[in-house]
Length: 485
Image (cartoon, rainbow, N blue to C red; front, side):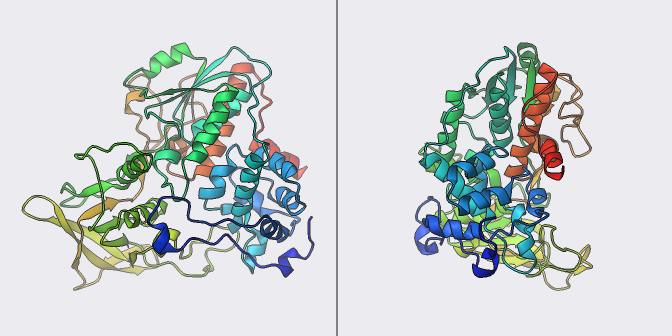
């Protein structure tokens, strides 16, 4: 333990964000530099609990008190060794993870939690700065070949682990650049894309091969890959958007959130966007339907496109600002939160039900008819009498989640079993088709990047065992057993 009274002596402090009026003029990361000494002080707030609930809160099982102690002592190489032992990509999770570990931090019972996410990012960046992140090709090759379909966080994590086990790994992706959700679904102001390119360069130097611009199921069949490789991992995410099934949803100007975000990310990357497919919010009334992270990202993007007005609509009532008795620590707090995008300008409306999109004579959306809801016990609702109204809307963005993976082309090659939600059904990370595995949102459903990385690592170990009969790759479950022994 670094400082035994650090949690009593120091307050939580994080990097300051740039002025909202200034940062909407670019797509760069919004936070300013944070002195190294201040990061050490934040690490000193860790109590080194007898039972570190942060381990269970973190899907990766990161050894959080251990790397906090190393950071406090200024031992960055030791901190990096500890962090990278459980997390392939802390430079990503340190920027975009909602930090369930902080919700489980014992200190958060009555004080602000330890700044775990910031400390993780600091370790990752210090590792690159000090040259600690170097390509480490495997000493030997097994001769086994694995195809990973999808280059998002699950696919990349699995590829990294399988390559280290000595297998030859090819990563397929339909896009012309790797990264999946990280590149095309998350705005640059949250995750600048040079961080992805930097990591991809390391993976390539270690021996991972990327087959980009190849859509499996269209350009090449899954059946052919199954014959060509010793194992196949489906890490295709959950990308079939949930439809807002109300009248008028086919009007011009209504789009799925991910389509909108992807176009803007391509624009920021310098790609040419054909005029007939472009979506731009300048001088428009933008209405975002859905209150999750994707909706928030749409708000921040619309602000950077200089929308006339941005509003966000949610059908649930506004959450409490404090934990309720039925949501105790260490559960993830179901409390009101406000993102950096909301700070830049957004009217948030709670407890409204969408009824119908309305449009003009040219078939373009002009508004959304809504009605206010009265909730009972948080489970049942009724429409409030005489509360119906029409909200102005020139650009409607649907951000209400995803139904399932886009696996129709894969199921035409094999009768791969899926569960009642349409996700791949697995046993020990393997589908009912021998040699075909899955990881991430395609089996879990829409979830967090940190869960995708965890799933990718665990699936890689399962594939290694399938190919070799045993595995030296780390396992989260084995780590827990060691911690409890």
